[in-house]
Image (tube, rainbow, N blue to C red; front, side, top):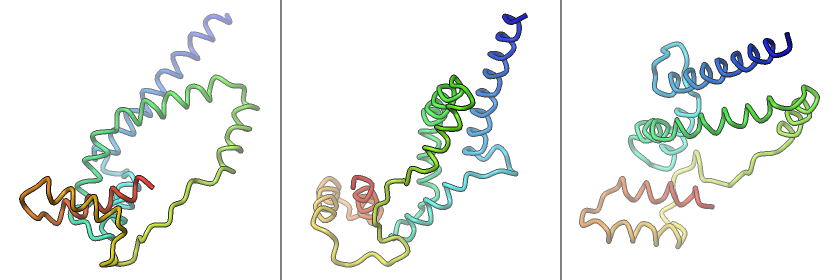
Length: 150
C-alpha cells in the first residue's frame, strides 16, 4: 500500500513539474493568450526609460533564449523544497519572504545624463571601435549592460 502511494506521489509530482514548465514556456512564448509574463513589459519599460529602442523585442529574445535553463532551475529548486516536511517548507517560505532583494540604484524613470560614468564611456568607446558604424543601439546596449554588472 505504501509503495503504491509513493509511486502515485512521484507520478503526481512529475506531472506537476512538467505542467509548470509547460505553463511557464507557454506564457513566455505567448502561446497562452490569456496569461502574460509581467517581467517582460516591466524590463522593457526600464530599458526604454534609459533610452533603448526596441526594448521589448530584446527582452522577449532574452526570455526565449534562457527560458529552458530558468525553468530547470526553478523546478529543481521547487523539488528540493518539496523534499522537506511541510514545517520545513513553511520555515523556508518565511525565510525567503523576509529576505530583501538586492537593490541597486539605477536611473530608471529619469533621462540618461549626458555625463556618463567613466566605466560606461569605456564600454561605449570599446563598442564604437569594435564597429565601424556609430550605432545608437550598441551605445544604449552598452549602457544598459553596464548597470547589470554593478
